[in-house]
Length: 148
View (cartoon, rainbow, N blue to C red):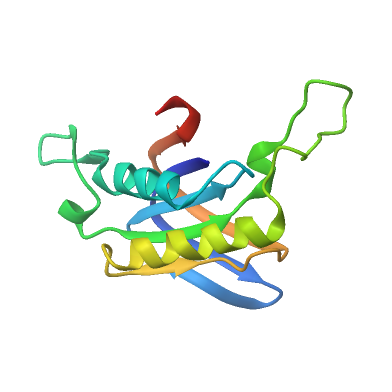
């Protein structure tokens, strides 16, 4: 499982002409799922993300968690995080999880986050989405379950 976490001052996701998710200060998170992922891995990833101390304190040091700053989450499914670009110029996505399994884990992650973070917004699985962010910092991290 992969999470690309971007600390944002605001972010939104639009499908068609409709804004389906919108947050203020917090994290916009792109979520990639592989076939080997499961709920236990999702639990570990969510716990790590929520506890990360990547928000600035009064001294400008990254020392505060999402809860410390009353941050919000915008969670977006992103199968292209599992693109394999080793051969040729056209990426292969065979390492991405099957859609049914990936969607189930995406929904599980949303539910798990909603139990810990007061404001959790989402994209729409499998849809063409337009994501707008104001990256705060800029500050971007990648969590990869294979490296945890």
